[in-house]
Length: 44
Length: 256
Image 1 (tube, each protein chain N blue to C red):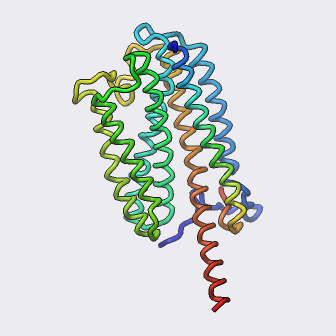
Image 2 (tube, each protein chain N blue to C red):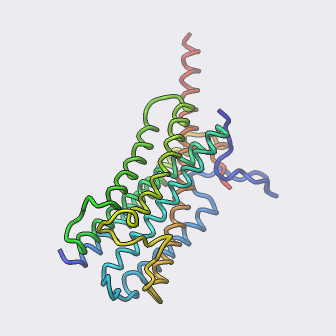
Image 3 (cartoon, each protein chain N blue to C red):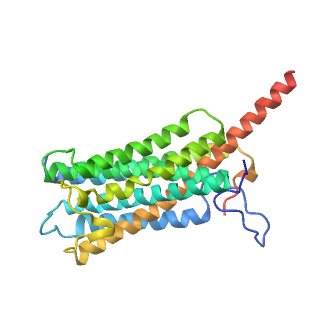
């Protein structure tokens, strides 16, 4: 593999991992919000 | 256990109560999220297309635009965990317990990315992905320590015991950060000298320096955004579990 491939892997790997984690949090947050009382999910 | 309000307590508003959210998002996180997203786009433009290759590092400087901000975010996350752990042992509130755990999880995520980026850089520069030299060895110890922190939180126990044990680990583990950080000074190894809290490469100037600091700011903003959402998810999960437990107790009483 050329150095360009390793550089691309570093950037793509970082962005994809963070995007996947963020998506998991947001999706799970929406699901959990449906399970709790309104008073427990009032954010500023 | 004292139950505190969510990370951002509900403020009194002229129009009455704040509407309940159907997710972990709020106006503040949406604004921050868009700012971080714009920052990431700018970072790609500068880091990939505009920044020139370094005279010494060549094109591998582009990996440092990912490596340095991810390790910075990880260090900040671990320090937040240590502070929250101390506050938990003092105040015994759920807020600090969940904040510490949320931050530790993010720290592990960013630290894993740091190691991954470092391996890509090592393959180009050293010819191998990994060497058991001082910085990488201490990095491994630090990473495993926080994996242990997260594992302890998964062990079934009551909330107070879980909070106390993990808080003690959260405080002790942070001692590893200066050891890892100073490893390049204390022991001879392959890793280049420290970049953050140190030299940020004194030869770095102009677009390279701007890109390096842009990456730092964007990733710290990203960390804050993720932390708020992760904390709120942890809060909601605890409330859902409480509710499930209450329902189970009520059903059992009805059966009796």
